[in-house]
Length: 276
Length: 335
Ligand SMILES: Nc1ncnc2c1ncn2[C@@H]1O[C@H](COP(=O)(O)OP(=O)(O)O)[C@@H](O)[C@H]1O
Ligand SMILES: [Mg+2]
Image (cartoon, rainbow over all chains, first blue to last red; front, side):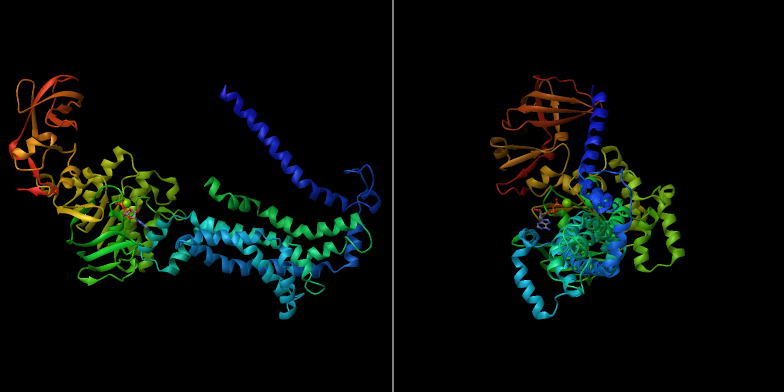
């Protein structure tokens, strides 16, 4: 009995997983498809799925109208910079919480996470004023700092969970074996934590890349990243679905490619505790 | 050399005093076992010696040098952990080499010592594997290999066998004993298993709630336990305790008699009882008896070879007078 149920259940689960995966991916797929349609086909009713004349004219138009390269560069600098800043702060923080915890460690972690429950718009005004005062408005460094701060709770939490999985006795063994703190970090801790650090880096890059609230509100022209590039196609001249889709596709393409090549790393990192 | 002296050493975690001030000397080359029930502070004491925990007060000396504030890396002690604590991302060879690498020993010497250790521990064929690809027993050997190559002043073992199955445990016990015979290095071995303590130790330290109850050779503890706790803890099966009139007659509050020091007969003897359970092992027979002198607890009797008895049989027990242990109201031994 059990033998005949198991494969069937497996098939159902597989089907279910694929369906849900497809459902999640569908908007992205639709955006990509639309970017290759003419504006007329894009709003056709009933919608056309793939049987249309593929065109690159939207991409041409977008490239002519805006400086994609500059937005891309800003996105890379802001996402990359905030990630590096964040990890430099998060590693020592998670380290000490995992290996030398105090009575309040759990509270601090929860408190940090609770800041994520506040709607961002609630602090927009003070931060906007601060940015004006400090001359950070529409600067890459300003955005790096803000994005670093908003993602910090998540990456500290993630690294903390990851470090917690490293048995303390292994670190103690290294100490007994004559390793100094520096050697312990270089030869034992880091190699054991590298998968976790790598997936944390990746996740942070993705979160920072896609962040739209702060990047839109705190930039104008100079520091605007790809989120602003997309937004610039959504309002002023009415809706141009095909061009908006082309811009969106160009904006998400780099992160999609990064995600694709690192998916194994990302999945094993995010499910580290679960599978072991 | 490896003579370790603890001088009024105590340890508290926050407000909880786990180890009240305690003195202990471990002589060079001695195999010392810390034994006691779970939670009594054995691991804590070992970790204080290792330097993995800071002592709250007192002084630790290693070869008469004050080591109290010396970090673990500099104490020259090697430790084998219950979980083995191998480096999962390194091969067996790299694991064993790690302490030598940290000590800056040259490559040729490293290889020589690794080969010698691998040969002694039957690991030669596994040097290129990762710890994850080894059995529990092999992992334990790697942990021991990693400890011996650095030629420490003393070895510290924290329940190294408790993750192994019973058969392997006996084998590894002998291997560790042989290792001690060969190296003659000081070893401190923590266990909650009094059989391990009795079979391996030169000197046993019995701990309860962080307090040393008695220090002595296995036979000293067996023959002259200084209090009821040690008497009950050392020896297997456990000592029988009898209170009341029988004890008062001998001027004691409690008397103790070991199961192997009671003779049994179906016809006559000092104490009458009925057999509850009889375990026939061939080599020995263990009898659990409801005796009149001990109404609250069954008495255990061990007979050499086979003794035919069944549930409900009436038997008579006679303790060997010179083997009776007497304890006062405070639990201490009365001579
Ligand atoms: N890091 C610690 N913080 C607080 N209490 C501890 C810590 N380590 C051990 N203890 C307590 O100290 C006592 C002795 O523990 P331990 O030395 O591990 O006992 P054993 O090894 O004999 O089983 C236990 O009550 C334990 O809860
Ligand atoms: Mg312990």
